[in-house]
Length: 473
Image (cartoon, rainbow, N blue to C red; front, side):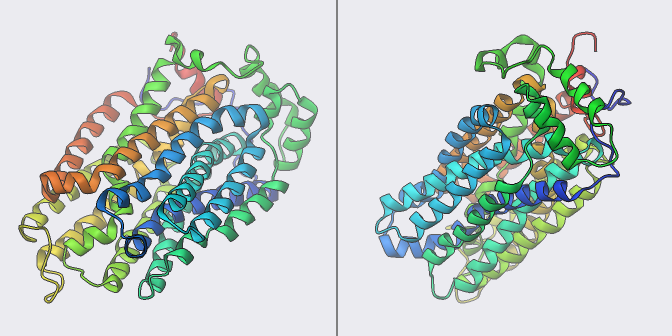
């Protein structure tokens, strides 16, 4: 297997020059799905204090309220693969919009912690469905030279959603109105549903279902200035022996072992290097660093995490199809690892209990923590954030792509659940410094594994990437 890119031949994807109205609609669907995902990730950090006060929750229950979104996402991602193959990418996005809307309403009206957790679970299922369907939808409809940007727009939308959540948290932090924080996603969830109603279906999925006439109509609508028949013929060649989605068991066949290992490895490393621990528990981390008031925590969280996240993801989208996936991944992991080591060192000086005196505000070590976390967020946002999802949606052949992406996404959410469920317990057990150094160790392991295992896929058509895994290559 060649880890570096080769010249693409026989590229069946549409030319890069054509960005049509219907491709823009596809991007809108992907952006709303990612934005809702991001908002639900970011809003919980501001909502937790109010939830704790309303329901008098223990540390364990705080972790349950936080982490059960990831359990729902795990279930939703497993469901989305089969659902997407059975009813189509478009209808799967419709389901995601409905789940986001329902979950938001349940959370905002929750009379007790069990109903709140149930609402979080419903939202999590929507997150999991969207996390599989949206990047897959983008990958199958995007021209080859735009594919990295299309899929990365999903990650950009996640970061914008997180940023907007932090802005809402900052605005409502004084009142502690957590019901409004959590319920705000009902409106964009409904918008996602309505836009998905008019969005085009994937011609690749229609060809998989032997519905060539419909695939031709969608391709004519979505793309301009291409030979649609040539495009569909190229898809048909790739699907010639793949007239129906593969059973789950086929995903584990020897011939697909390499792409499966790449996808699952990236899914795990994206989470165990610490990103969601920082996103979910940002306010608690900054409180430990000396930002004592909810207002100061909201401000530093909004700009040090939310704002930096958006800007760095824009950088990734600008360069992912030129610099390449591997270079961005490897460079980002260096920045993440170094910054996590610095955070661990800073917490050595913050105090025995990990809490700076509230009267004096943030110490020099607290400010150093913020600076190091800015580097961490920026490094993640141009590497593991968008690039992981791009590669996961590229490496599988069409026959097993739906199930492969679903399994990798489920593994990603399973890893996220473990990190978010036990982060506070781990900090209590071994301390903040060792916890962040453990994340840094995982960054080092991830760097070595990616260097040896992950191929470069920039400017490769999906059919070329499929040939990459064949024995003769």
